[in-house]
Image (cartoon, rainbow, N blue to C red; front, side, top):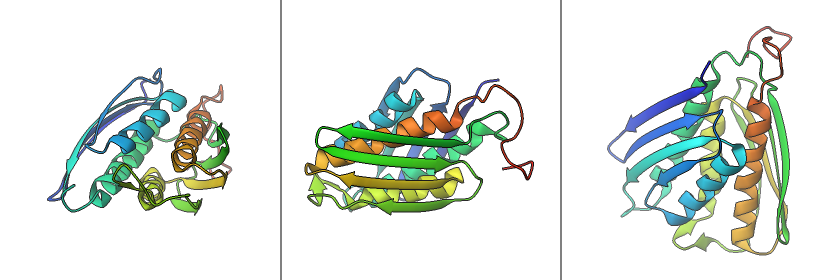
Length: 194
């Protein structure tokens, strides 16, 4: 069984084409027009061992909000679609990642319920035109559409690039753990469904 998804989303604000393979090797081709965001998504793919192909355009002449949020929507939808009924997965994933002086933690429950808890204060507001407040917006969209409890925390750090990178890497690694096969085919819930 292949755990893949292809999501296309076209609105008056953005056009997104995203392909996701949960059982990949961490290869990626990402082009959103926002270099720092591309860099962060590359970490998700590499450390999540997800194959990700993403082409996104949007109204960047306004700002990056619509694009980043819509990519999060598509990533979350792709994750949910690729998982199907979630039979035989671990369901939970936890990862701590250091990036030099920074430490980030992500905890995931693929519960079927979208909920985000996000604790991060970045040492500056913008990196190369990318507003770091958009990190939370991205993960909010992923949690909603991926139907997961997602708890993200920046525990400490001083360099904004390291802070953000630690968060995205820890998210990728937590996803990898949560989607991993448990070795059986049961749905990991006492309710019998997720």
